[in-house]
Figure 1 (cartoon, rainbow, N blue to C red):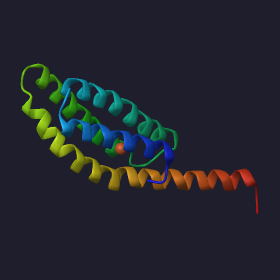
Figure 2: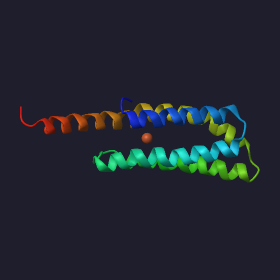
Figure 3: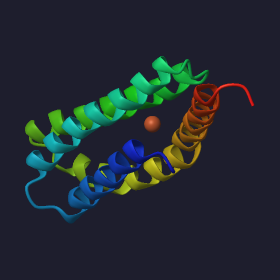
Figure 4: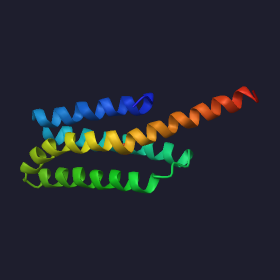
Length: 126
Ligand SMILES: [Fe+2]
């Protein structure tokens, strides 16, 4: 993306998605994924609010839908329906690739523009 705090979170998301696909301790991975999602989406949403990003509503709604899906898969896994975790593991990388290349790319581009303006203003009139 070119915006370091978001890039780090994206790497972490991809690692957790790969961990989910690998199987193993799925309840622990789903908990870690929910934990990550809360931090990841909260950071992006704070950046969007702080910099008055115009697509905040649409971007945050997509975050909320995905968080709800992951939370539901976690609930169903605990209720003895493990098959949903496998479906999530298949769908998550596709969702993330699309989200990252559209919503997050637009946000990173916007934030980079805000920083350019801040640096220019800090340097004073040319
Ligand atoms: Fe996002």
